[in-house]
Amino acid sequence: MTAPIPTFEMRGLGLVYATSSSPVEAIRSLSLSVEDGEFISIVGPSGCGKSSLLKIIHGLVRPTFGAAYICGTPVNGPRPDVGMVFQTPVLLPWRTVLKNVLLPMDVQRLDRSVEARARELLNMVGLAGFETRYPDELSGGMQQRAAIVRALVHDPKLLLMDEPFAALDALTREQMALELQRIWITSRKTILFVTHSISEAVLLSDRIVLMSARPGRVITVFDCPRERPRSFDDLASPRLAELAKAIRHGLDTTQLVTVGGDD
Amino acid sequence: MTEGASERLNYEAAAEAEAATVIAPAARRSKYQAVSITLVSLVVFFGAWEGFIRAAGIPSYLVPPPSAVLVALEQNMTSLLYWQAIGATLGEVLLGFIIGSVLGIGLGVVLALSTMMNRIIYPYVVALQTVPKIAIAPLMIVWFGFGLQSKVLIVALTATFPLLVNTIAGLRATDADRLDLLKGLCASRAQTLRYVQFPSALPYVFAGLNTAIVLAVIGAIVGEFVGAKQGLGVQILQANFNLDLASVFSSLIVLGVIGVILNASVRAFERRICFWSGRRQG
Image 1 (spheres, each protein chain N blue to C red):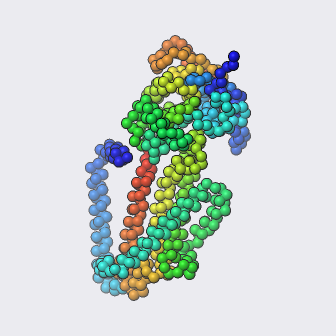
Image 2: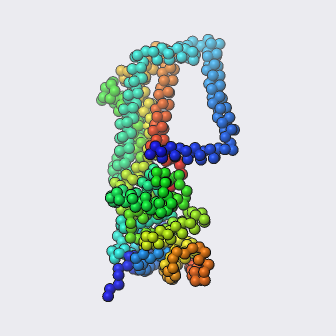
Image 3: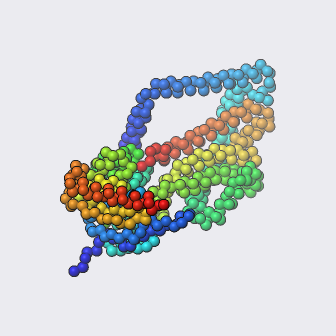
């Protein structure tokens, strides 16, 4: 009886980068194993290396120690089976919404059937009818929806999201979180979701990874109840409220430690 | 596509209308005022010029009155020879501009992409640029003769540099997030250029084209001054030699109009190609 290969895994991941003064240790011995279809949130104080972590998994930055594995193979550079949503939409202003969303198809020379999938996804996120519009004609929330569709259009095994709703207003953020939950329930993608928002993490996740301040380490991994869908009202239920409280407490503790540790 | 474009315009119009609701009447009035002030001052200026020359009795071979310039302009405009001169100069400007632009953009791409080529070639480019074109012009005449070739080369040399510099700047200024996006999609270098770097650099390239088209007219006239069989520069030299200053002034006006039209054409082209630039970024 062998255990199935995890969709995503990291073993002893560490990152040290050189600066003009002294080397900075951004991440220290991170290990995590993620099963197929899991929604994992990564929460931590600012500067804990969450974004660096996603860049490593995305293949844009090489780790100093250890490695990340996707479906058992180590990440040595960008790979076509990963989708990424950045903090800002990063849409190309000279391409229409549909052409933006189809960028992975153009770059990876996928066949035209992807276009049908793109239209379906646009429809799902409420962007039907906006295919021929240009990004600057869309609101911030709509732009980020298009960016999510672009990250999903080539059907990646793993979706990385780096604080995707950070630039949006509070109301749009909540709508987007609920929408992401809907997308996840229908697609069951494996998602690594970096966020600053505890309520977003509790709403969406199967497991929540709490990271410490620099150097970033895993402090605790919280298990969430599996029932779906959840609403923001559900966050008031005793179990979820307890969970949010525990995460908030954990965050406060690591931030206190940072203040002490910097001296 | 057309539908998308018109919707885009509607959107723009709506946004403008929204922004302008409060101040629209005042803005329109001040726009009319601005135009009428320009016109009135123009009439006053030429009137004063004409009046001063008549009152002071300055001979028209020293400073021609506007009326004489108008007469000379009309004479030139009805002469086939003069239209041939305009054609010759325009031909030099356009040919040289196109050759210089292609050269500048091409070289810019090479220098922006290869550090080694940049180290080897860039010093020569800068050295060549610091030498005034008028100093090279006699050489070109010796090498390529009094015909079209030498002038086209001089124009091309003047037009190359702004495009070279702006192409390099544009390609290097590509947003880091956009580069990460392409890299993350496993794009090749050629694909990154095609999908992100070239389009991102276009507004810079057009800024270079705007500068180059003006420099191209200067280059053509410089070339013609140094040695040419025909062209507006030749017309100016001949009229100057004959102390026909009214004709000189009229040629200057024609040159000015040509410059404005060429510049406006480049800008119109820019608005078509870079319709997204200067707007909110996605």
